[in-house]
Length: 117
Image 1: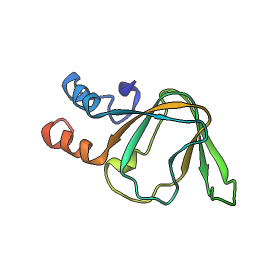
Image 2: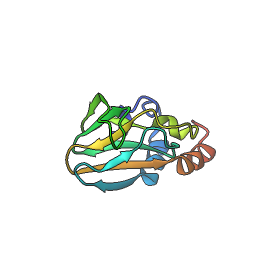
Image 3: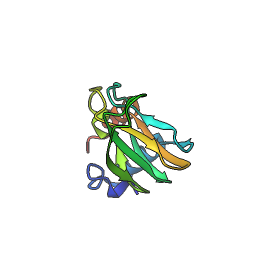
Image 4: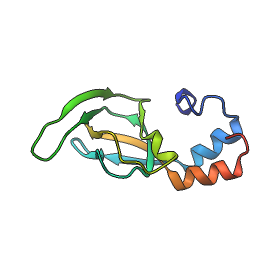
């Protein structure tokens, strides 16, 4: 699954292994928010199971505009691996999901230890 992520596709087995060890599999419930538009980004997410929807402009009182539907293998939040700029969208699970998460801190440690990055 990681080899399908464009910025991991050229990595060696050693580097992929380092990324896999840093991933945490987190369960989310139906309608649970994974990330919120405007919050500082701290992690990258890879959808392992379930489906989720991406919204732009969603607030407590506004439904927002649907900009994408995500399924197994979809990923989001990759900019957060480099900086903490505000999230561009909100992601909410359509059903129970399992999502791999890689924090910026863990990613930076991997980069420091692997010259390949």
